[in-house]
Image (cartoon, rainbow, N blue to C red; front, side):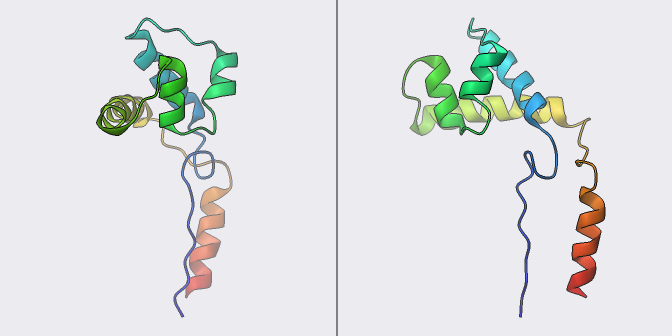
Length: 103
């Protein structure tokens, strides 16, 4: 029998919200938009990029435009986050215990 465990990195393996916030701030500043932390909390955390971009840009963002804007924002995120990759405390021990169960 094949067994698997699937994890979502954002917020499960790593705490990435602060880095997504930084990327969105840069992304929006390029467009002369300056959302507050309260606006991010209400309209960013836990939401998908289509919702976030549509909300803050004030119109429906979809299709190729969505893909292009997502790529731009996610590229900013990867650039910012690449030197900060760090699992949440206790995750690696938990992960090692799971791996031992597979043997």
